[in-house]
Image 1 (tube, rainbow, N blue to C red):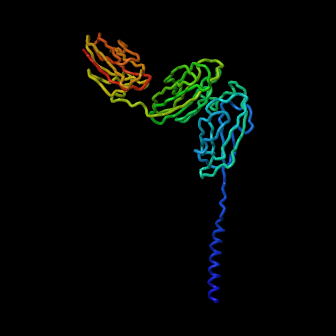
Image 2: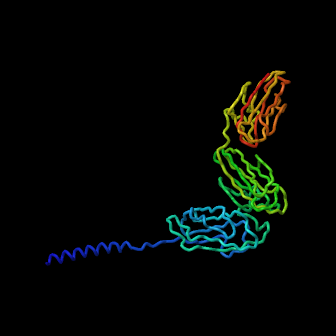
Length: 373
């Protein structure tokens, strides 16, 4: 009898020990929810830019994929960026805001931190824009109206709403550095519904302009071009050509890809680098953007040189063939969007003649026939 009591007491003690161990660990897990610690613009801010950079800081590192639902009343969100340094979300809107108008930003309750804990309660804040003036239309890169004010960007990048306004602020300068040879493509589009404006774009290396183009920037139409760069630091200058008070809102996307793949005759980008050829049919040739190909052939007086180049990539890119005499002057040419391109010249002096083949506004694969009679 005495022994039985001791067994029961021992079992009870073991049971109490098990329960006690559970209590020490705690049955309720305390959850630390993320909170919004700061916003820009601040809540109730006034005279806010028509192109604001809307930023939201959190107390915890967030799950970036959960932030896509952050929005602004009446305006479509283009995308939401997230920077783990500072736990900051940035809302990029798809169009400029109206002047002297109140807007509300909502951070949904469902946004979560990296551990899956939700905000729990939606966070909202409001602000009011200022009047419709050039000063108040300045975007978040301003001032970047001169080479000494260049705004650094990382490629690839997309900015859905930027502005060009007035005379002194009509050009925007964006700088970037390339560690290796790269083809950089930029795409522009007017996003404000206004009439077409005369627009110009240029790439600079230091104070030297290495490429430029002009076009008419219309709402809904994309202006796109590219350039193949060597490693280095460059500046993209874009904006209105005219010094007027026209207010223009535009989008900018800059992408990078592998440079144009040269053919076996490179480097032959200049007359002094012309690759020697003989009469023959040539295939697998490539003309790169702003990068004509030069070839050289020896002729005697009275010999006739004919060069035929066929664009096998398709399209209607403007191209040209230029034959140069021994003194490097152009003696014959054919250019246009037709294919094949063809031109001939009868040598009036003996010596090395050179000819260039290229489609300077595109990347074109071509074949070439060189004939000497």
